Image 1: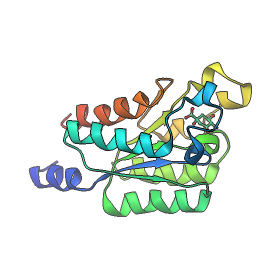
Image 2: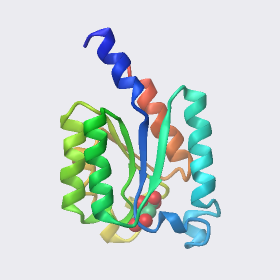
Image 3: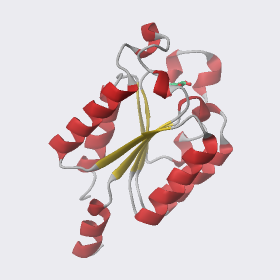
Image 4: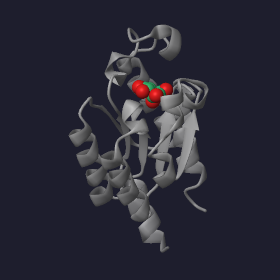
Length: 158
Ligand code: DQA
């Protein structure tokens, strides 16, 4: 990889993409997902990114099609992705195929979860995304996103 490739890759803001029902954080099952709402999560992600010297673009949608299109956008822009696919994690082959395009393009995609799905209902034990992700971070609440961003920085020059 040339120096200019590294510079170009670093220039595209990391897309931080949140799937269905994550816009309801704060009021949605707070015993499981905590009291931080999506606006608060977005603010924290921006702060952590700034501390790490990253630019981020944080988005949320309940719409599978929109999420797929955002992953296409990441490929075209050369952007790394932090993705919380929410319930799509467990069954969306369309999202998996879109995520695979990110990683086969040589970009990084970190799958994140607030909770640890492996400790929850059986249907959450399957992730159709993990097999095409660069890595997965789950179970640390909002800090899962901070860990995902640091993983991107930590592996940037490898
Ligand atoms: C989640 C876990 C999923 O099982 C669930 O459907 C979500 C949130 C998490 O962040 O812990 O909506 O992705």
